[in-house]
Length: 269
Image 1 (cartoon, rainbow, N blue to C red):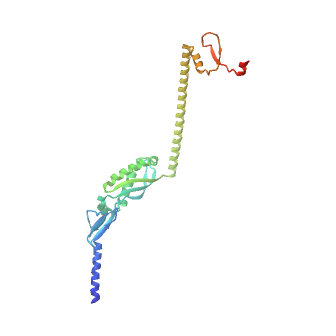
Image 2: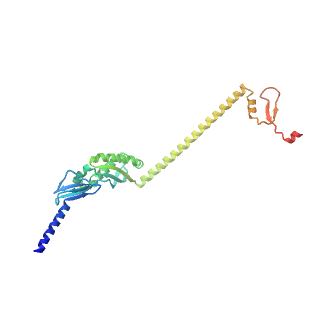
Image 3: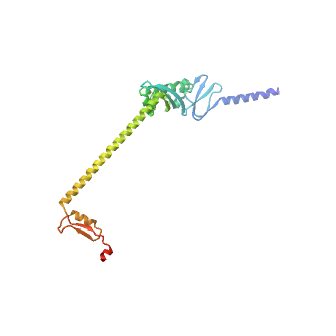
């Protein structure tokens, strides 16, 4: 009789401890909880932190609301019927108001059943309007259009943060053709630059020659109108040494002043 009296309270204490543990829950940071009671889902999600629920008959399912990143391979065809394989990275987030619906309809992970097919469909629609060469060259534009289409298809139930096109693969023949065309375009651009540079240099030389000719014409007219101008220029350039006058005695431009470099020995003679 004594052991029975001891075991009874112990069992009762254990039941109380288990019931207390079953009646509480903790939602970790970055998650929201979905409360399920006997198969019935509560319409309101449980926030982060400590909470109380009905023991044994209620369960709290955590749903991640942080931004998630998943890889997604995709295969599409361009407008010129070329096969293009892409490697995408999808950044998405589950909004708080969609936590319960996501759990009910997609078991808490909507990527495979909702995000992946909508993103691939959006990307194929955009790629079908562009040539393979444009898809390779305009990757950012293709990404932006695909992101816009994917958001429209998915709606407000999820937040598609961004799409990243990590790699684009074409057939070897097509890649070689695109590379050859790009090289030809670069060479053509270089030739156009060289031609424009030559034309600019020629135009500059013509302008310079016209300027020099105009300067000569102006100087000639000035000398014709004022014959003493040359004498003035000579005087302005005189370095202070004794000049030598060459020419007649008339007051004309024929009289030219030339410096005489007379050494001390010559002066003594």
